[in-house]
Image: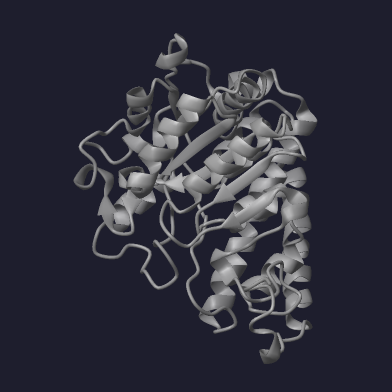
Length: 352
């Protein structure tokens, strides 16, 4: 099967809802979207990209320790999806969550400080790259255990329904997580109890270094929802507007009807699995990565907005300058922040 199938499919299927596949292009969707929204989506994708590039640099310099999983290439998934939420909704992610946290509005300086293990970090320097958390933003954590966030997200959705909060939970995870038991248990309960949760599988094609076709007997991962009589869809995860449109529909259904949904976003990571993994590794070629970069979500979206006259080259340059300054300020904040006091190692770990 062609590798590019996972990253370039422009259609999304919603068989469980009785809808046919969408044939709209990104230009079509952009024409019917508020220009202010379009510019905001581009700015957020650029912020995530520049933040992750700087994170890679700091990791190489030894200022970020432990594991560090970058989101470069997948920006359209998180930006498009999270743009549909209200302030009272919840988000749970895997360990590749820097971008989601930025899009949700967590302070870039506090995120960078957390990556660098500083006291002023969002998790007080104790969580690092994989465990960003901010209850005030409904950002209920990055989670290091593969699929560990899926049952937790189901629990948040149950609590929302029980408390009549009308909040929706978005749960992001990689394609490798669909093969673990808690994924199936969670989807079964969400469908059975009619919970307001949207599960988003970020299928970047590789579970660490294993291609999805070597790990899953089913290529269309969204089809796994059929076993639980749950609405399902797959979508081009390199198209921010296709992502936004589909998730908006799912969120509205979850909020109004307590109807869960599984969405498979077919995307591609341009970096290795983590900073300890070479970009190309032994499981994909340089030519493959370069081919996928032709579908860079930021470049494609920028081209669309320029075609429609929403922005021009100077606008893009100014926007890029703005986000680079935000990232540099975040680094400066981190560098002047204090190290955690070793005596605080047990604080917030246990409660009495």
